[in-house]
Image (cartoon, helix red, strand yellow):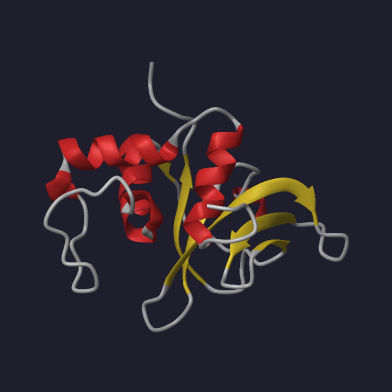
Length: 144
């Protein structure tokens, strides 16, 4: 996928690839081994794991980060969120979204920025509290 296209999950996958972690593979392997732990919503009606798409669904990433990383408290305190943390949101109507907090701060608010893609290409913006937060995670890669 070209770097200027894709969806929100692609930004997370690219971020991990940049530090040598193949999140696409990690998610797929866990789904193959633990398929019943993952959602099979009416939208997708999954019958089996699919290495081409498993990593591109926010609910799958949420389950993966809970299983293989750390699920952190959701708060309204900016100091509880750090660079590298993953945040998921409900954009309204049950539409999920995900972004990764980066180590650059907004010149206006002083808060860490979020890299995400909400349909207009990759963006780095101060949006952490723009939508209802549904998940807060840390993932450092596969255990040795």
